[in-house]
Length: 381
Image: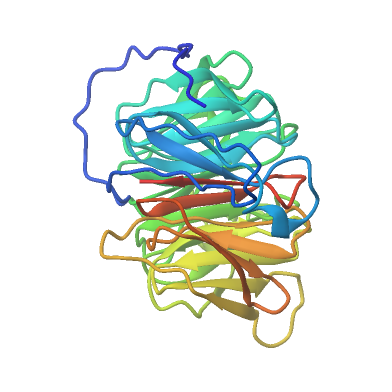
């Protein structure tokens, strides 16, 4: 199904800035998965100039095995590679971010359609997250974060402070509206979206390692800890509740060295994404070493925190920041892969359950529906 009626979100009055290189794949091409039950209709479009999101499964079955048998829909609208996806908590809205500098909002209940466009960034939008059902935060290669009204598509404010590309962002629940951003400048910055100005919203900055580029970030389930991953192959945990010894002198600006809780080793190449299990007990990481790993992040764990290694996905020379994600009940995991396939693994056995074809470019993002295990959205270059 194709939609061409794009509503325009908030406009920017900022000066034009030059587009800078980024880390995502820029391969062209999209595809659609065909149902193989012989009776189910298949929604297919041939507009090769637009990049698509692919939807596996549907809402009328509870069996994961029916994913390939069910009709698959391709959502068209982006003009260039799609980098990131985010469902709202209800699962009724999907937001996609792209190299074309926009985010599209999609209604995921029948009929599927694009009902709004978020515009304002001056470079590729590399990551997107919902904060509750009413707000969206985006991270861009233009060095900024933007905070949006998810209902109207209006831009509420822009957060400036990073000096290089912002690779990733995460958000807490609607009540707290705390944001964490990861950048090539080597910092993880925390922002309070409830504060009106960009300067006042800045809470603290945390140094990842020896100020290596930071490529991924995630809040813990209780929002007491921030996890970051970067080109040093390490996952670092910070306690953002810990008192700062210099708080009296610098209440909002510090390096947060004393907030470091631990570093987890195991990956042998850049970590491209971090994702918290829905119950908050494990952390999932995707890496350019070609593996996805799960980690035990419960307090007071003795021994190794590395739990399982999932193999089968690939990264290529394009060095894209491919994502990883959990199913709603935490029993399955998935992640982006450069082999143009959507891989799904069993969390308990680490065995690959499904390998779904159809994309013709690198799969940058794979996301499970927040309430239905048989509903997967994927996005590619």
